[in-house]
Length: 264
Image 1 (tube, rainbow, N blue to C red):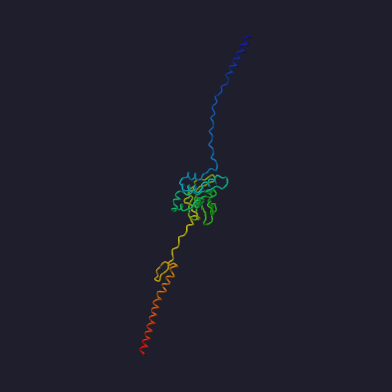
Image 2 (image 1 turned 120 degrees about the vertical axis):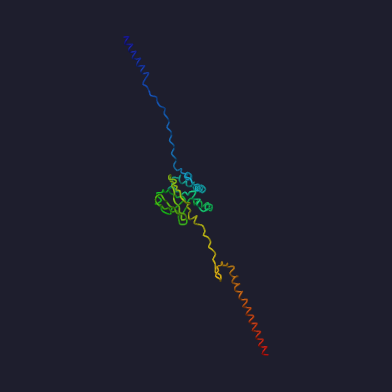
């Protein structure tokens, strides 16, 4: 009986020891927090001056965009949900240098504004669609009627596009930016519209010339001088005629008196 009790006690002791130790548990690795992904750029944040500044060689055009307020207008249009996008033709600094001396300084503020607006179309036109557009294109400067702000483009294939304003002929040299409803092209010349560059007055005609009696050309006298010249030409030959006439009458009288005297 005592042996049985000792066996039960031994079994209980072994069971208790085994349960206390339990199975081995693998250590848990610490959890590293995930790196947050970079936020995607917000839509509608394109900046026209930023695009041009990144491309370089457009400092003069950037200054005109800012001074006329057209840059803010373009950014506002791009950030709005409405509209068909914009196309901007950007002349390089060399293109502005090629203008006649004093061209920009001779323009009024309203003309400078119209000049910059003339380089902007109210729709985004990819290079591949220039061969399908209808000329003349209407720019943001205003009417496309002859003598105003018409702009004609001609696609020559192989990514070559020519632009004509009626004053200058330019080419699209490069695509600077496309996306976010904006397309920006580099052009070889400043696009001068007819409404601005076509208003230079023509030079005054040269004065007319008349032939003198000897066949030499002399300037025509003014109306105030003409009567005096005519009067002098009339008076000069008349005086000798009266003198000759008076002398002839005197001779006749003398001869008549001599004849009468001889008869006596």
